[in-house]
Image 1 (cartoon, rainbow, N blue to C red):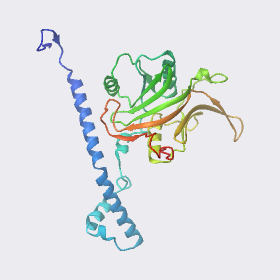
Image 2: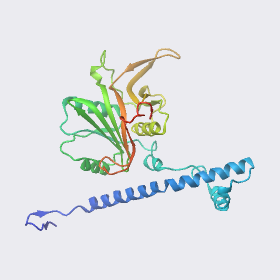
Image 3: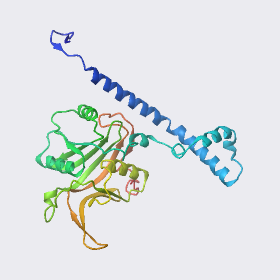
Image 4: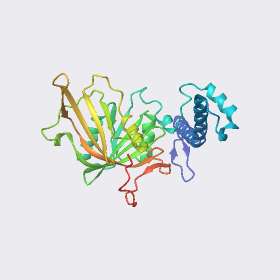
Amino acid sequence: RPFLRQDGDIPTMPPSTSDAASRRRQTRLRREYLYRKSLEGRERATYERKRVVREALAAGRSLPTEVRASYDRLKGEIDQEDEKTSELRTHVDDEYGDAGLEDPRVCVTTSRDPSSRLKQFAKEVKLLIPNATRMNRGNNRVDELIESCRESEFTDVVVVQETRGEPDGLVVCHLPLGPTAFFSLTGAVLRHDLEGGAAPMSEAYPHVILNNFNSDIGRRMGNVLKCLFPVPKPDSRRVVTFSNDNDYVSFRHHMYTKTGREEVELHEVGPRFEMRLYQIRLGTLDQKDAENEYILRPYQNTASKKKVI
């Protein structure tokens, strides 16, 4: 039933009960996630003490003095653990705990008022990622966009950005809890700009190659990227490559055909571009106050010497 506002007699409708319930549920999930994350330091310390006890018992050595007082409690917890509970869990397990069980559903959109070239690039990103849906941004705010994708049960949101008609930014936001990874793009080449023209775009699920992602941040970034793609069939002939070289990630998309018993021939499908990670935020795109897991600091004295990925 419509009700009157305080400042006039224009009828407005009260918020939907389902919308209010959805917001309360998202708030509760976020609060539980942050609480579990706050316990990580304590759980890591307990895990290290258990590891010391396990190694001492396995080697037949005497217990170190720092764990003798809590040995009985730690030994009881160790005896009750199985293969799953013996491993240390982190907030990453909460964010991507269901990866591989169900195919991801990805929403691809652009920044506001996109150029024709950015629209074409978004279309190619949509074709690149299986089970992706392209959405026109229109005048939607970021919070409205994320809420709409949550209600539609998307697992990820990919936003492409531009400067003067040239794609120069990519944002990957995992739903419903995060994280959000921000990348700068350079050297974007669309499919029909490739030399010799583009090969036909297959809809098969691709194999994902992550090359030279060796650090903790590198593995974190690789996890964000690979979880955009579903698990492929073993005989799939479509390959997506993310190759890291000195913190710059080259993206390539190929099809291959067998020309001999141990020989294959690659056909580039496109698009191609170079990426650089500059921020990982522990939250969704609309949560600007969320904690930052990583921020690129290019102007520090040691920035040129460090390899992050």
